[in-house]
Image (cartoon, rainbow, N blue to C red; front, side):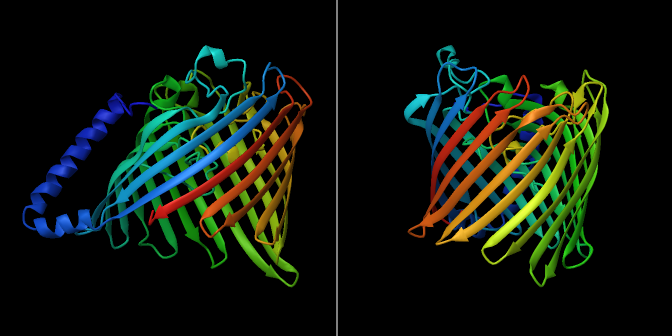
Length: 415
């Protein structure tokens, strides 16, 4: 993550496309230099600071992790010129006082192997750099960009970590059909949270992402998707996934009920050395009224031939417990029964979540987890988050894990 170099073949293809786009834009600009200059100079700049302290006590390690990190984010969005605009974003992640943690995947020295992993490596990153065209019902982006689909269960930005996951590619959004939005992206490279200095942080792809959302009514949405992942650098991540997702809401006399149902099938693809065909489903109901909310859900990630259902592009921290014990689905699959409760009081948003984890094949108990968070805004500008997770293991290879966080975020400008 220190020098932002991406020398993969996929990035060379994108560079050629970007060069062609710039050449066309420069030729067009010759006839209207003044308006183009005004669009570039009249854009919006933004600055964000995010400080986080993370503590990890995990069985099997001699020491506890104490990670104190600060992320500085700078971005700039140009004004629009004939439908064209550009956006750039730069991140700098730095350790502040406490650095007793292993940042993972070879991003820190061997002296830190005695500590649990806190995946926030020190360094700089060109987080986003894309050219955009917006005209009528079309939106097209070329370059390094954030892609967040649905609730990020399959494709997301891993925004919880200090170094975000972004995508080098070409994406299109079309909203010209009634109640329907079509999204497609060709991804040539995934810039993962570990940064480009290590193999785990830079994965060359030949990946296609299709997501179509239709509003059946004002309260009911249906999404169909096809995610065809071909990962050249991590073949085990190469999968074909096809699914459907439905969400809806009901206004009742005693509150509002939000419902979600989802089903998908997955098989190995491209150069994946494993062979499997498995499925995924999730059911969730969430009730809210005034300051109170409560919910129940069940998620199943299937297994076949000893291989679990995979979501390598997901924002995984948001699912299956904040202790991050299931970033990779076990070979026997995973079933997660969870209960949620929330309450808002005095400007604070409180949330508690309980998980019961077991194998999808064989029914073995993996363990349980209790998560808690409290968030508020101070002075109208500073967002404060307090968060904790306690995972209690019932079977190997899982181990008891406690994590706690304090995070403060502030931003200036328009982005």
